[in-house]
Image (cartoon, rainbow, N blue to C red; front, top):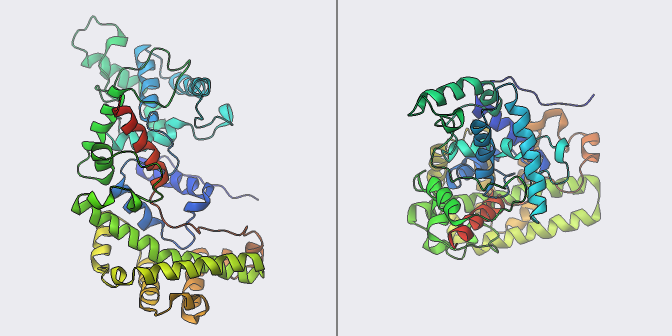
Amino acid sequence: MSSVFAWVDFAEEDRRRMAQVIDLFQEEETRDELGLGVIRDALADLLFPGTSTIQTRARYFLFVPWIYLRHETRATSGADVARKARADEDKLIVALVQGGERPIGAEKRAALQRPASSVYWAGLAKWRIRRFRGSQEQYHRAWTSLMQRSREAAPDDDEEPGDAATVAWDPEIPEAPADFLKVSSFSLLRPEAEYLQQRILGLGPTLLGHLVGKTKPAEDAQFAWTHPEASAFPERLGHQLEHARLFSEAMHGAALLYNLMLAERRKNAKWIDTYRTQFNSWSELLLGHAETFSAWDRADFWSLAEYARARVTFRTRRFVNDWLDLALTASKPRNLADDTRALTLVGERERELKRSRARLGNPRALERWTGAAGVQPLNYRWPRVRVIVGDILKGLEG
């Protein structure tokens, strides 16, 4: 019998978190095998609010409201809005393909389980583009009453329904191109880019805001901390990013060790050699930044995690601190690959999280391991953020 995720229609934030968990299972580089995701995601939300791992391009922050505003203008009924909006999303996929783009759902089309509107729904609220506070399903159910409120908010009672003021969306959203559901692209017009920039800047001082307001595109930067202008980031934002970098680099060793342990249990010589090599490289990185890591204020890091509203359990915090104590005090971190303390720590952490499903203690679960499990360094959604920021900066260039 296959397993399924299900949830009751409660708070939008709870729904968003569950959707993100499901999405993360689809992306190998974001798999949270050692329970670090709660810290990773909180720091990512702090640095890059409104983003997610499955967003692709910035113009979706306009495509989605354009579709719904189109149906406000047409006075679509509450009984039809969900179906017709989804039909428009399917048209948008075709329009983007016609424009030479590769949109969300290009391969699956009508079979797509999570259309762009679902992917961007939370971000639209965070950037204050969406005013309606609730899930997409709740929005559809409230459609009739929202349209009534829109008509009541109109300055002239004789206006047509299509001229009513929107109560669900920011009234400053740029006007949609007339043919955006026929042929479209991800290229932002300058007014569109300026609007998105202002929405982000309105969130207060964030690294995302600095990137769209003060930098140039950095398409080759592998991480936010390797951005060519990183040394010029404002002190407060640079401080946050430095904590994120140190946590990513230090904890990467635990992920590599976990995969090495799995490879050794599988007796796969190729995988063992791969992870031994990568673990040794990680060791050299730690030694190369020994002074920085020795000066790392971990108490300040945990304060930042609390400020970012990370829901860190006692066990997670203990695991992180225990690993850091081992990794950052070892004269030769590479020796941790054979250190009983490190091996026990990682093994107990997996059992703590997965219990009977732990690969290190379950031969059947181990057999299903395909050679990589959460092995990439934490990047805090940077690959997605880099593209979205690039879209906005290119649009600002006109």
